[in-house]
Image 1 (cartoon, rainbow, N blue to C red):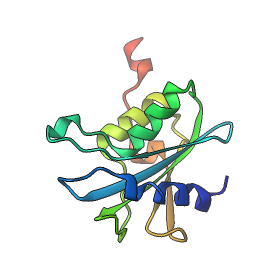
Image 2 (spheres, helix red, strand yellow):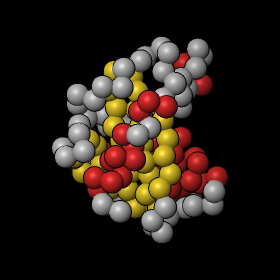
Image 3 (tube, rainbow, N blue to C red):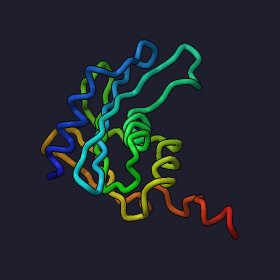
Length: 136
């Protein structure tokens, strides 16, 4: 799958976001090593801590289906579903991605299907805390 197609899959999730509080819609599309795509959107809750981001929604869906090997994720977002800037993953999402993805995992941020910035996970989460720290 090419980058644009992954971004478009994330874009398709924007209208599905449940965001009555922030009104900031986020869509994500996670590409597995075997080419399958799992999508997600953010789902807010009146108890703010119970909300879940689009990136984690996609990842949890994939893991719950037995997937453990991932290549990339595309993320788009904007107020009222209108994308005007890049929407990078929050710190919690970066940490959860680090649990399942290596340092070279790709994160695609898009302002449009044509304007895409690509980062490796280790660029967005340097010195990540992972399972190897627990076994030292």
